[in-house]
Image (cartoon, rainbow, N blue to C red; front, side, top):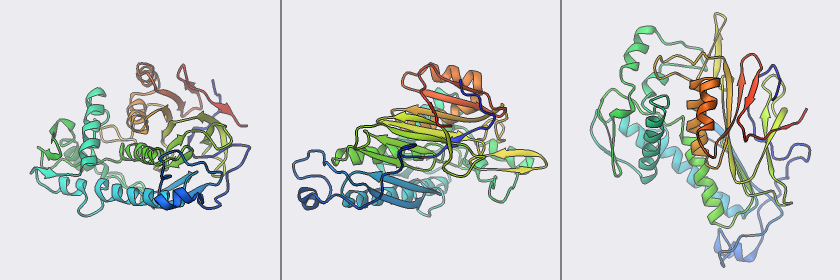
Length: 348
């Protein structure tokens, strides 16, 4: 068991102690260049140099280090922008924007939007509403950058319209039966996107990559030298990039949710973005962060929210009841507990 008095959040670190692979440009295989993406024969492309992509999307810095042709990362960037334009609640004309302004009328959406909503509803049902994408009206009342706490009456009015059962999905048509309910995919979108990008890289011949969507990291394959990727657990009380533990992973996702990610202090109380859909207030159960390792980043995204809201004891029981999920819970007092199969390495 870890015994550190500080809570943690997630930071993507390529190899602790070994240093980052330098971004020296894309691969130069003639076959890969001719195809634009993957080799013409469809086989995995061997490459010893990393191509990198850094772009600000989804209100975070997206960083990808992949051993593949640079042309493939160009296609990845287009895919990321596509997701921003259909999933973001703040992009005019996005699927979510259209749903939220449809006043209860049905809206035809993109296949990916229908898919992510179907998956979200499944997580909502399993968690008995602890995970709920209709919490958008409540989320909109909070401003963690400006330090604004919603008024009680406004919060109560918004809470009356939080109920995932109001969402009706028929193929690629979405209807929210409550005209005042608002969808927010922020608790699941990055996980869905991380899985999609990892799939895209893999299908186009990339065998080694680290995809970081700011709190959602997917490690594709192994590093070119055959070693596993190590995803660092950031100590928030030290300089950015300072880790005190790392999770060794291959073809796995590491997702963290913590009270330090988006928060502010007012009148001696810390307010953070992990909101309880029953109260509309930040969960106050003694937890500081939950980190989940899983094969699917989508699972990690949704389940970190559920596990955090459940609290340390019930959250651990939830994790242990799901094959393929491992977790590290950190309490505000510094106590840490890990699920039975969780593996971490101390770095200092």
